[in-house]
Amino acid sequence: MAGKGFAPQPAPKQPSKASQVPAQSDAEIFAEMIEAIGEDHYALTLEEMRAISQVLTPSERVLLLHFKVLNPRGEGSQTFELQALAKDWKMDRNTVYQALKRLHELKYLNIEVLEEEVVVSIPE
Image (cartoon, rainbow, N blue to C red):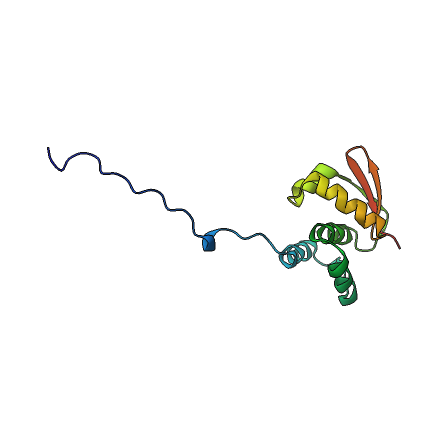
């Protein structure tokens, strides 16, 4: 019965680094946000973009623009669950909390923390 039987199977190939999905850049995330909001949008000025890119961390920039896109006119306040924000942006809950705290300290956002929720408004 020579020649009959099972031949060893080759080991599965590991995906090459080129085929792995890269993390999204801030620019890609912002482009998706802007595309999703349509006509009523937040107009980011070049001066503001330069300022936030020099002062804020990537997490802080994403969250700031998230709130400005959702409330482009800065009218009223909105309530968000910290865990939901973390999940939506694929961030750790503590990262979201620390970013919001710093955005409040720098006066980019008004934040009120209520248990597991935050009330966010944009200062005038």
